[in-house]
Image 1 (cartoon, rainbow, N blue to C red):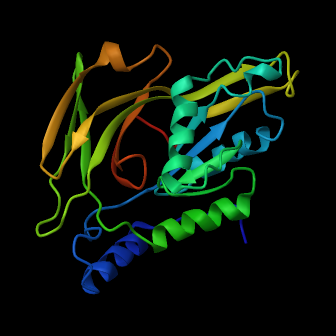
Image 2 (cartoon, one colour):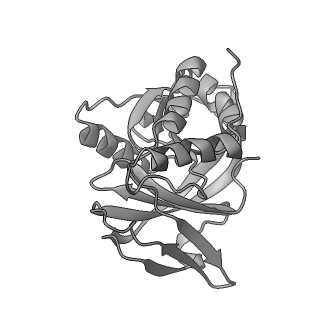
Image 3 (cartoon, rainbow, N blue to C red):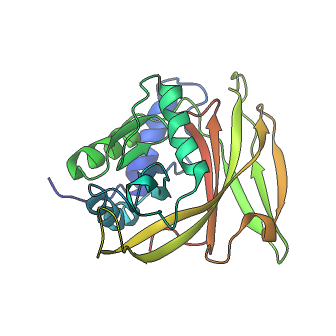
Length: 254
């Protein structure tokens, strides 16, 4: 098996069309490309993480995959303070574990679509999880869009499909730096220069979604950082679970 793969638009639409034909009300529409969302939780103070950090170059290049890197701060006590870490990133990882009920928190951990998780350095397991994501679409996929002007972003979330019970979901805004090289001076990775890709620089809760079409405006200067040139919106089931929709502004795959 190769370490990377492409899922063409035609094959993804075939999956979606098959779900509709099977009578699965509210499943992915045949005219909507649903990406797999891969979230890597990593740390500059974790000696097991560099292989996963490097593998992110392959993951983010996969067709119809959106990949994000979250640096966590709970390994800072080992002698090196992670320069990209944020407490919000660690909190997000713990919330995922609590929502799943397994409390399995580690680095490097890749979480797929807000549900399953695998060791981020185990390439075959990651690729299998992404394949499974495409083979098992969520009960519904909600179109989300982002537009921007000089001052603000506008995020629009569509309404739920007719005759479906919309789950309670939360909308997140994520600012992203596509590439950040770091020279690590101390700790388990001392002497290494690691390039982190699609680094989450700010994670902002936008609001709740209850099934109705909704638009939110966010001022650019409050949600973007100087080093973030891209962003995305994530619609997720509460408390923190399956991703139901997303939109990307800027470039995250190169």
